[in-house]
Length: 263
Length: 248
Image (tube, rainbow over all chains, first blue to last red):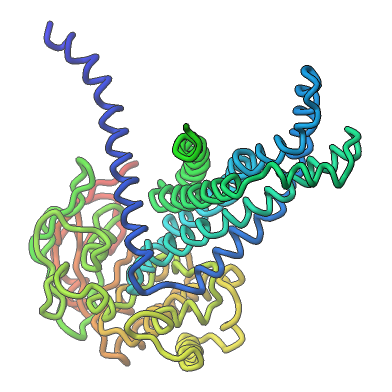
């Protein structure tokens, strides 16, 4: 009786810990399998091209809109904050650095996660529920290689491009607000932006983009492939893909910022 | 050709297969009958390696399942899935020629398309369907496309999972006839799982009754009606009373 009183809380604590470790192990194994397939033939170019179009090209509007409004809002906030200690002139530099180092990659990736991780998880989850994944196996095709590898590679390559486009549009958003609402001279604004930005600011943001792209597609594929049965199972997989991708983007952003910029 | 010996499979605490032993000779058409949840689909998936058995051996054409080149092992199989399982993102002809467009059996694009159109014709679909997408087809047409895909690479073994489920009786009859013709024409070994007794009579050379994870009875289709196995008799006559428990 006494032993049960002692072991019951430990068991209650241990079960979720073991389940969490098991889930982590499965994700790590899945990641290693996807990475190993990236360097082993065959490679499905048509699937890769389709993924590139869907993940990269079709995400441009959402990334562009996010960036332009973020850049504009950032300019207003920095101007308001800077005016407290007569530092309004820092607006172009801070908008540029804020966009390329942090907001461009992170907000862009979160928007792409919402759009792409959900879509990949729903598509692959539906394929699983309707036995299309089993059909792939019976047709001598490895589902991981056919479905996951092209999508993960496409997202890893296209996110840095989306981040670069988002950076440029975000800076333009700041410039637009700075020149039209805050009284900045156009050429001075652009000169300040160019003077303060360093190549590493941009490169670090693009590297972050590549990592975020990898995470987004990986989570979409993993949760889709492990989807439960029926509409509810696919819905749950979709939700988990977006939530996990978003959390991992924010966590890895902190880690990468530590690695890139800690003194 | 296909030999299962004492195959067991459980999912968690649920034992689905409890020692399935079955032999399907080369060129024969075996139909496995049995109620829902008795392990028919799991048996097929074990043979294909989609599900790994917990115990027992499966030998296909002398090769033990799970050993040797997996792609070569699977290349001898064709399968028609219950819901056809066509790839939504590909047009019909690319679904049919899927195996011919990649892997060991890859052919030039134009040749693969020509073969796909020929296989579509074999299942009664015209070339105008080749460029449609699966979502544009009716259920019966999807089954035909699934059948065309199953035979596209001239497999020596074909599996049919509930080939007539969800079809009207006329379309079910058409699909049954097609399956029988194709199996005879190709000389393939076939395993079909179904609840549909009209399918059994149209397709089967041999019948196996699976219940509660074990094969209860096997025999020829001719012997089925006269056999004294109470499980078979209850199933083929659709009786509520008998050794197979029903929920009411």
